[in-house]
Image 1 (cartoon, rainbow, N blue to C red):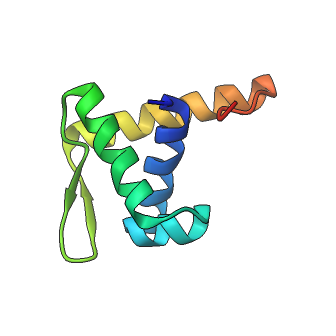
Image 2: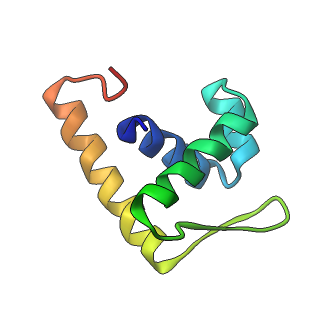
Length: 85
């Protein structure tokens, strides 16, 4: 699993409010978005999102992880590195 890529997908899902909206924004298939989020949850051994009818809800652990992801992505951007390389 490419963790920076998975974090990018998770942030897109959270920012857009759904996996399908993240799929459209990132121009990748919905199944890929869903798989990357699921793989990230399996890797971390925590549930990040509660998936409902077209709506995502962050768990408490998900909120903390998303906040950490945002800080990491800022650090990566400031370093001038592409997180998906």
